[in-house]
Image (cartoon, rainbow, N blue to C red; front, side):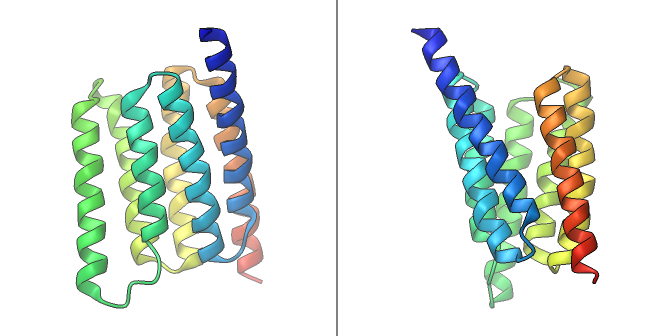
Length: 167
């Protein structure tokens, strides 16, 4: 039974990767957020099926954060949400601390949070490249080769989209 659950989890995760790649290819910041949130939600399901509860919660929060990050007119609401998500990701980092390497994903999710809430579409995507490099370093450390490949492809797609946005 475990093999079947693991297989289902990895299929869901693979679909999440494909959706995330699509998100990076979209030039609209709003569409990027919608597709990226869907990809993160699928990863949350994958991690929960694999009994990686903290990773599942982090990805679920990531999906929620990404959906809430756009279109806030009132500065108080935007600042409150951004601050709340930074604090939440800080808490999740504390709860899942595995040494200094834990700062890599912490930087990635906090940098992405600030980029999503405060930067315009092009600048946000440039900041997301920095987050990707933190994920890549984390993947190398943990020898997570499929995640490393997926993140490198995401960087290439994102850089291509950034290039298109400068035209």
